[in-house]
Image (cartoon, rainbow, N blue to C red; front, side, top):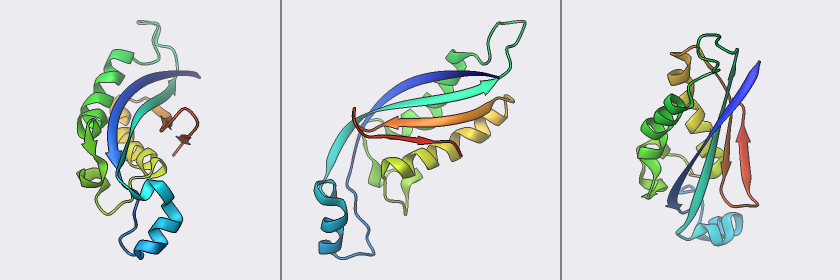
Length: 133
């Protein structure tokens, strides 16, 4: 099995708040993140499969980039994540983003018979979430 990764970037803002909790409880749980703020996110999508003899590729990275752009980046870049449809009724934490992005990308990649291995999101240089389904 070979693993290949495509790295993409987007900028977005959010507020971390749970509408079911009090203002004080939200402030206690989320701290400064309970106010509107933004991030320059880096997204790494790793797929795996066997080398195709005809192309020498596991999967065409240009096609992977297009899928990521069409299905994810176009929906979140320069947006307030709390108002984006894919995060409806979800606190837009980086953990939830990884899970939702997985749910969006997996069926798209299944069409090409390529296995989605992991989604890694860099919220900051020090805060990184990785999800493997």
